[in-house]
Image (cartoon, rainbow, N blue to C red; front, top):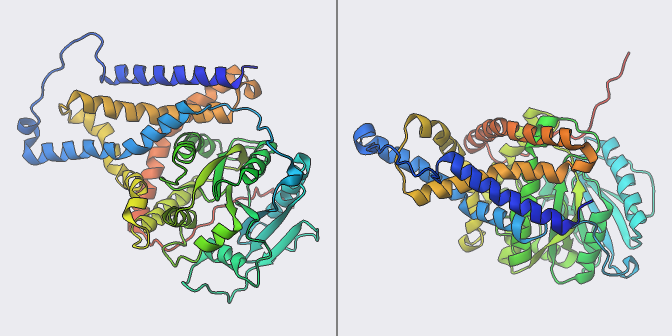
Length: 458
């Protein structure tokens, strides 16, 4: 099997070659030196038509910061780090609370994953830990010295009126509920999240180091039984996003410039209590994003945690779209919140508005063919670079999620082709989610289905 550094070098070579070939194919790099036919846009489309076409082309540039960070993150840091090695004894690690927040709609899933995650921690040799399940509805977990079930009372209200997951997370921090010391650590998981040996070692290294108060790592979605191949292949982009800009912002800047995810979150108790999840309605839809921006504002530092966790992509296209809709609505609320200074959310805002203006950017695919306009050469290069990086992220996501030694070369190539084939579908879903999210009611929290229903024959 190839070593990680050799794999990374091959990946970088392929990545740069892919960008070059894409630029040639798109016409941004002209190898035959043929002059393109000049079109006068002002004469052909009129003043207003030309202005609209150029404005639509410029919307694409909003993605530059995150595209550059994804490119840098995927090339500057080893994309195939291999097995995580412990840098200290698990016996010397501080106490770790693995906290799962759930509404209680999928009790069997929660019970099964609590058992699996507890066994995984024991396999790695972790001694100072517990698993805490925070739920709106009682799950009645089996009694165990390492398991604690916390039921949030229906009458509980936070000071600012936080709702949904924020409300449950804040309830855990109340003095009469919290049993953790300030120097303990919390690992936040979604109810379907599974630990791996690598991520447990990575978490141990992170808390033993103790230099940063917050951390996050990679989540992959193509493990064990795949429920929906379409959404799983579409989520290969998110895997690349974790390995790209998420790693870069934490390794290089130790700041959540573009925010972070709501799962595989590692926090020091004292820091989490000071930042708090009691952030009103605007901090209740994308509570992870608001929390990260608030912690960034208050001067806390972040780092990337080695090792991956496992989750599953949404089981249906409806859930996939609802998930994206909630994300865009929640992030918009954070971006527009007066409580977060502009300088702390500038990159998040640019990223968010590149998402909000996706319908305008997408229209360029059609308009470039129907209504071509002459652009400066550097603009063609930049737009081509953006397109190449975004397409390659689907390819890399497959490489990272579906190892060739596990699936074989033929199926591996078919999966890459499948991921590329999901791009039009993903663009359509994202566009619908954006329009619905911008126009719809924003203070709602949709829960996707996370439990596989086994049909019962009567």
